[in-house]
Each structure stands twice: as C-alpha cells, then as structure tokens.
Image (cartoon, rainbow, N blue to C red; front, side, top):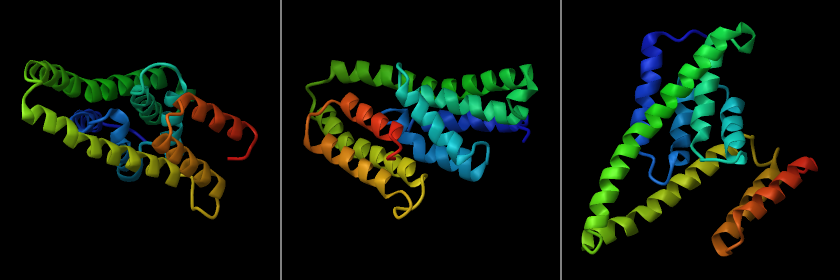
Length: 196
C-alpha cells in the first residue's frame, strides 16, 4: 500500500478532528480510529490496531502512546514493511509525528484555554453544570472503546472466557475501589496461563 501526500494530510486532519472529540482522553476516540484506519482506509489490520492499544496501555507512560504506535504501523505498512529498511523507519516516524501532532495540538490548546477560563470562573453555575454533564459522555465513550476492543476478538461463543474476564473486570471497576493495577496483573496472569 502506498500513501500519497493527500493520504498523509488526510491522516493528520482526521487526528486533528478526533483531538477535539477526545473528552476523557484519546482512548475514547478509539472506535472512530478503528473505523477510519481499519475499516475505511485499510491502513491497519484489526490485530495491528488492538496490539497498538494493548502495548501502549501495558507500557509505562501516557496512555496516548497508542496513537504513536498506530502512526508507526501506518507508516511501516505504507513503506511495505520493516524489510524496506530506512524507508520504513522514515515513513514510520512520519506517521508517528502526524498522528501525535494531530491528536495533541488542538486538544492541548483548547484544554489550556478552557482550564484557565474554568479556574477563573469555577464558582459559576454553568461551569459546575458542564463538569457534571460531561461525566456520562466520558463513561459512554469508554464503554464504546471497551466494546470495540472486546468485539475484535470474535464472537461470544468462540471467546467466552475473554468476555467473562471483561465483564468481571467491568463490575469490579464499577462496584469496588480495587486498584486497576491488580486487574491488569490478573489479566496478564490469565493470559500467561492461556486461559484468555
């Protein structure tokens, strides 16, 4: 697959627009990233998409690193794979730069301006109402992201254990104050044992 200059621009503009929808973090836009990169453009495979998210979430550092991995994979795929050497590295770095600048620039600028205004006007009713109104939207976007990631592994009948772990983890997060690192560790152990 080859990407033209228009394709690279389209990738950057798409991530610019997603940046403004990233209420609750970039991970909440993962369903639309999946639609665009995997289903519409075919620049990534489903497994490259989910692997990018899984690897970035497992690694220390900011959660937004999955966007860099997606950009890297798009670039490497555009070059024809890592076997093309420096071309793959160059395209991979271009993909990383475009995706990260796209996802970070608008939201960072908007967040800085809004936080400054919100702090200056924190006692106003409209600011308190906005904060309370955004909570259900963020939760719905996170549920959509979880659904996309879980559904990419196949049907319930084929992967019932994975769906069971997902349901149990969801309930534990919702109903308890159990630290997420314990759940990540438990998921890693279940994966290592071959149960999921």
